[in-house]
Image 1 (tube, rainbow, N blue to C red):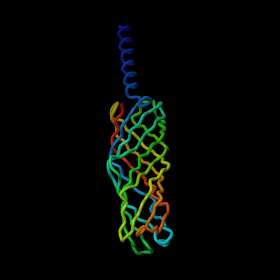
Image 2 (cartoon, one colour):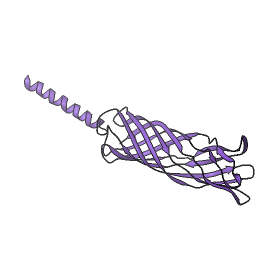
Image 3 (cartoon, one colour):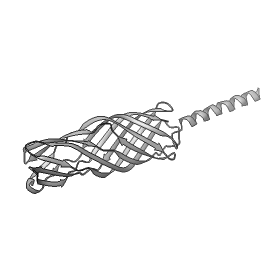
Length: 218
């Protein structure tokens, strides 16, 4: 009887260890996260210079769309992740002089972002796995447009990025995720007319990206 009880105890312990190991969240994991992303510029209230002194760019509008990340965990607590999207995000804006709207326009932005990450609960079987990260972003601006006989060009821009997020694991491989990034992005913006530059200045865009969706680790 004692041998039988010891055998059952060993089997139970082995089962528990196997389960914990399967649920362990850490080194060697690859993952894909994907979902709906909301991009909200926090800047965009920049005063212009040159011939457009007294005018300002403001009310840069939000946009949303699908985004995804690809990541790898080098150790239980440290990893790296790339944020990307299949399509750029469109932002409308106004140019005002005093209280008068002088022009309106739009621009498309694609901001791939690479962050190094820290997972304080990495290596454990906790279903809740928070993380923070920091790194670099490269914002690509395209399809710039402005009306009232003006032309606008925004240069691509490098900037730093900060990130925070959390996974809630539903199974060994599948979880739900929520994450937020702050991306510094100050593209050099040139406004011209008939080939003559009227204003050339860096525009504060600095978007916040919020994404909710699913995590798949393997």
